[in-house]
Image (cartoon, rainbow, N blue to C red):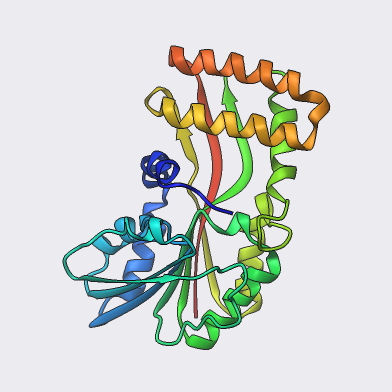
Length: 261
């Protein structure tokens, strides 16, 4: 599963607005008082977690950004007091060799809905073994609301969520079940778990993102139910007109998790 830099740049303002500020502050407070903080960021892309979290942490930081795409990692930020290490690695196939030794925190953003339950459970096991905390931001929860409502909305979201559970390279994906699974897996490992909502709330200012998002949804739904492609196309045409008119509002459910000993 891969995403290009243009998509990541398009979604980052919505992610930044949605990320739960209280939970991010809890993460920073947990790391307070340490002279040097080491963070491993999984599926790091262009470094969205670094940009969002590093300003909150009052310590010298070393971030190890892991992604299979070297071109995305090349966009990682360069910030004062933050050392960046990049690790080009296919997390779908190289998990056995991955070590979190020395990490105070293992993080990811917009990743866990794409992976399997077994994959995430192994991340928890490795994190607990290393003694680090876990921060997973912006995981899709499956809840989507449109304003105004269209009669095809429920069907579209049903098929999108089925598509989300398909194999994205890590085995059958958690998709909209990821927040529940993460919380249960961390609790089983003896960690204290905090969850907080981080919903996208998209409107007129997010027109470019909405066009891209809804086109992707219509295509994904069509892969699950090809006999309904015409219905999904008509839905997309109507929604695109509302986006252009600035009248469409979409709430996309996400959740953030912080787990620590």
